Length: 151
Image (tube, rainbow, N blue to C red; front, side, top):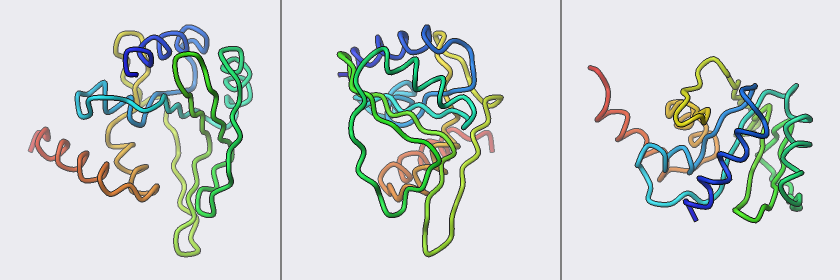
């Protein structure tokens, strides 16, 4: 699956261009060698870029139905099934925890480009996995970041 996602990531990069978006999630972890396989292609963008990005990505596949989640309150979210895998596009990420809304602000200036792909920071996805209540991913990233810190 990850080889297909490699191809899909390159297609997305060509389609969206060097704009206001970045790659995260399991594909980011895969690019850093932290997991053997990526499950899908998670893309984060700014809320103002979302409509344009969604329109361009829908040319690659078909939008999937999304079931509302009681805690995930992002401004924008869609899933797109392509021949090479699923793309999840999100913007204005917000999570409701214990009646408090936690927000993640995407910063395109923090992206690292590798093989033409705009990769998000691992620290950003540590924060997001904490918000999404994904303890295994949190532990994986905390260990990796601790082992690779400059302290």
